[in-house]
Length: 293
Length: 152
Image (cartoon, rainbow over all chains, first blue to last red; front, top):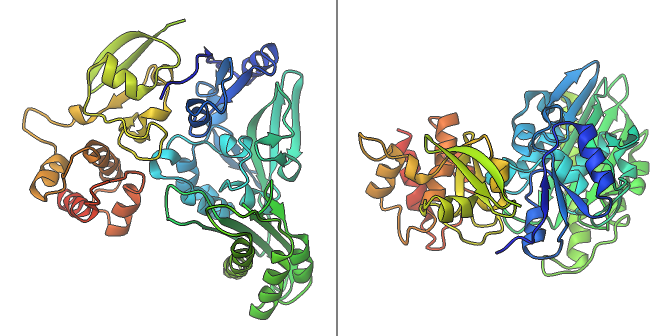
């Protein structure tokens, strides 16, 4: 398969990358791991005139835990996130998503910034980042801004990033107290698969670890973007956690999504599986929250 | 416009002028004549083009040659030494893990990354490590046995 011709740029700083994106506004694409972009270019879905590679910008590949935050450079690979002890301790569901993504070969190339920036509705990392309330550091030609990840996705392949902007880092404020989260994805196979449904749940318990203080649930592959299930969250808030409550929340989540029918599964099946994965990830979140007491 | 790149392939330094749209698998096969790396789907699905780049197993069809500038690449041709076949290669031969052979170099390199990191993996780890490599002869069981044998 032949790649369309393009001009290749390899900036060594974020500022230089943003300048290049501004100069070739609308005609350039950012190249991170290449596992999505190069496939789309080979299939002639995309043929940008310029590729701006982010692979030689050292600051993008740093992963730091400090002062109650986890800062993951956009160029950190999915395999590094999967293997990171800092991620496992502070944001375990993100590690679970990383381990579920693609194959070992893809994980060694793919980056967290690419998985977010490509804005695929079935992507493995966004649901957990949504429930942790992560923020994106967007760098552009005129400076930096912070955006909650919930405001980033606008549709399949569409984001709030400007033409000259790139994701520099993902910042998770590590919750204090009794919190936990879980991520599960359902596909036809265990690897090299596009998700049929993927769900992340987050629970924070009160100071006595008796009632749910905060609940956040994100549903993937069942809408144009990953979706928060506010109906399910409302069922959970302030209540005592337990199987029956999680069952009710799961049922509410099935009413909060807009799945499509395709060769991977029917809309009805997807909706039913949203319920199953919501219930199971809530149980995972509760187990982790209780392990912190 | 062609770009000049330098990379090390199987301990040999190369300096080449490549078009930016050349992928690493094409560089290896057509510019360097290293046809042990196979080209299957060319879309990152099959794993036939697996090589080690700076020690990490990757789909070389999803890496641009210009991205490999300054990096160290190991292909199946780089595994054999003066003492003979690499233990993984020997185990694949002895255990009958090679049928048509098209997936073999990718399987062995994925297994090598695993064994370099985890010298004595369990079967679930082995299965996970080769989950990006498809064998259309479906000879997975023998491949897993060969990797176990090499890890002994």
